[in-house]
Image 1 (cartoon, rainbow, N blue to C red):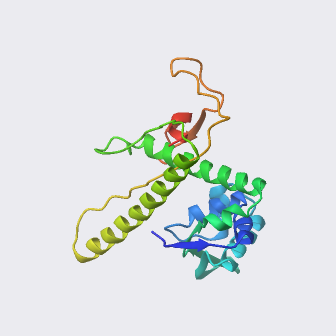
Image 2: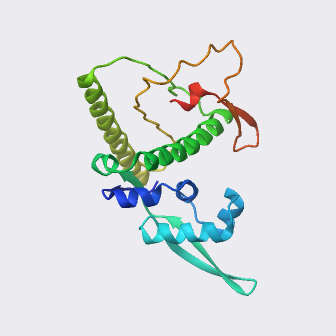
Length: 223
């Protein structure tokens, strides 16, 4: 798993806000691919994908790892070298429209990933966790929640670091785990309809990694 790179400049946050750039970063997290392969996988125009790959290289999140002659041309291959982690200060200075674009792109990616995992039994394993906890808090309670989640995320990264060290020292089975943490203001969000009622309008079907069609329901999307 690639290391995090703290983003402290709101201008860089804006540059990362494009949905296609978020998709490219996710696609190259643990693999190598060319813009041509990415364009076919993501359904984007090759010229547009190539441009955004170059911008991500310029920002320091991707690097070229090889080039291969192909039909009289040179095909360039890239991989991610860091995952952006936006600091609170940088996020505070980002315009609302950019924040919403980034959140939409991230939730779209998370939703697809969660749906694929659910369709392949990812939640069948012991100790898998899925909860939704609507609560009412005051200003102090909100700050305490934010602090606790920040501390938990730091602990998650420390567990990953320790696991990496142990795996390097001895052959042992490893598990690719995903942790999704969210805290958001739901004051203006209507309660979802009962599970036995009509299918919510926001429910969409996503194709899982194994080709199965799985339903991404709001309860899953709001991990």
